[in-house]
Length: 595
Image (cartoon, rainbow, N blue to C red; front, side):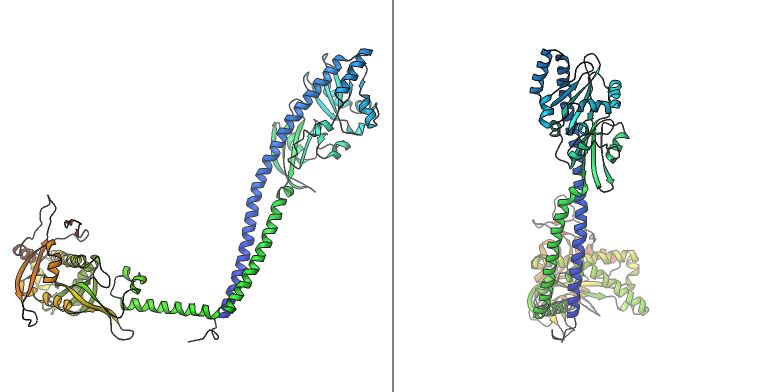
């Protein structure tokens, strides 16, 4: 046997270590990619909901603020005049509304908040210059603005500070313009998304979280989100866009109802900012994974070098266990497959011999003389047919066929495993013999009954209970689990008496003491066994007792009826019982047999 130093499998172990580490690394990368995509999809869905809510909330707040500003401007235009009292009224109004820059009514003198201009160092002619430059808005306001509507414009480039121009109609239906500081409106923009802004009908930016576009008077008509808004009449919508230099982002818009039909609040959130935290977390996770894989690799190599003897002993022990399992299956090869599969139970069976109380059924072949003139092939087929009936009948009640011989076969109940004690084992043994009788009767009837009696191979049974020596018997590599003892010899002797008494199932006194109460039996004259001084009692099994109330006892019920059944089935000197093989009788807790 090779030592662990000369074992050629260690390079293979190292290779397996490399393969495992590589596999774990690939698995980690794949899992990280799947997690990134899955969480990224959830983040995108969250981003869409965020921009929708931001656009909706911003639109509502800006609408309310513009409506309040229009109401203030309307009050100022109606209450002020050219006289001294009008100037006092307007000065008081400006003192209460410092964000109000100026009012240019449809007729009359412009009202200027001198404190607003002086405090910021602005030119008081800025409102007039704005109107001269934005005649288009004046005309649009005159044509499109309703009595309760507003049209807004960005006057910041003309003022030099963020200022909104509000076009509205006074009580006479004429267009007036009010100028407000945009600073008061910036607080209305939702700060959740990356970018929130408001545009008018010409796509001029009015309010923006980024102050540069407002100060520069930029127009946003080329932005994909604005183009989407202009392509539909929907009051609001969201989508995913891609722009050069900006990458992929999620956007949503909501139209303003009181600030002209074309004004809207818009919100944008780039995918890079959405997934920045996720990417940082994934990078940290991958670094930890790489570190863990490195530790796994180091541990694997250390294990392969420092525990060779331990692993070698494990492999050697596994080889021994496999060899032991094969040896057990060889020793217990007479057991059914269901028992052979339970190697744990087989391993607990003593292999150095033990005394067991069992019930032995010896089934002897009858009719060899009648088939001697047949061909060898037909003779073998008939012998195998009869033996197969016995094997099937015994297996159905948990019996183990110990050996096959030229004159019959031996079945044992109670070793190496018991079905529930000596009485249960004896019950199952007699049941197996009765099932064999039923199979022989059925075969005899199908073959022509008494007319075919001279050309049949049948079986008769002797049943005895008692202690035996159980264990593997044989030489190295040729041993088998078997039984020996007086109970085995007595069963064979009982079987040989069937020809004398014209029966097919005989019980010994020990078996009768265990299960005689469950069967209809008839005691036969005692017989001396092998020159013994005291004759032994023997009993013929006629039928199963039916003790259930209301159920008629089936035939046969005596030896006469038994022999009639034998002769009718073409089994001279044998008996038979119509027992269902599909539903063999079982004993209940009260001692009654169950169908």
